Image: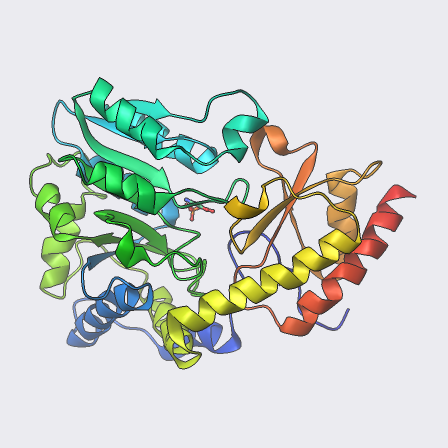
Length: 371
Ligand SMILES: Cc1ncc(COP(=O)(O)O)c(C=O)c1O
């Protein structure tokens, strides 16, 4: 195999040569003005790239996406109040676990039914309305935009309309949706949105961010600091002065800077979402040709993760190994889906011809995995 291994897992995603090379821009102390300049430029560029440039202020964190989730949850809920978590996948579940680990009461709404139905049905906004009425202690509502568990999109705009009828702040984990899924985030009335550098923005792993509306920012100052490291208010006050409270991943900031330049140069949000739609169409047409069944119904599918039923007589480990020998890394189904499903994800820098070749590689790998 003379071509690079293509990661078809939902992060870390493949990055361009220039993004990787940006790590070599050099050593830089985060107390120097050059870092303040980089920080300020990233804090402007990230919300601009994802359509929140006019309405949201960003906070940059060193840490993976879960750091942003944890900072958002613990910084959104006032003392003796609760959070309502929309839970229809592993990441919704993680939001609830984060709340409870930090001593915050978490109410949950999930689709009715058990097993698969819980993870394959988007949340009905009316269920959120009902839960808000039933639990007057709810101070924040948290939902995952694109559930990477399955590749399902939740109706974040409709849920936002329900949350906006109340004083609760609206927390959205858009870690695998921001910058690459079609939804215009400016329309969803989110107050604290979580993102990460290494999904749809094609930066390197190790940085994540919060994007806060005025209502979100006002809330940060009303919440007790539940963590020294992940208290969003401390980051915000430091970053407004061009400072960071702890040692940041400076070189990963360089890589994000490069990735954002590439994002804008390629045509920004419109171009990136168009590319992801085209990729989804291309790979899903080959899945259809091979008779592979997609778990999520068409209207609820995002454009990056596809969860597929394993073909008869094929185990995930053997399919994984066969495809790896063709230059592709795929991903197992998550949680209870692991024995019957696998995932193919088209996040990151992936040459078009490698996606065109994927169908044949998959066909050969299925045959080999069966024999
Ligand atoms: C929707 C979503 N939220 C949160 C995370 C957690 O991010 P990390 O693994 O970077 O901590 C992921 C990671 O895939 C994700 O897809």
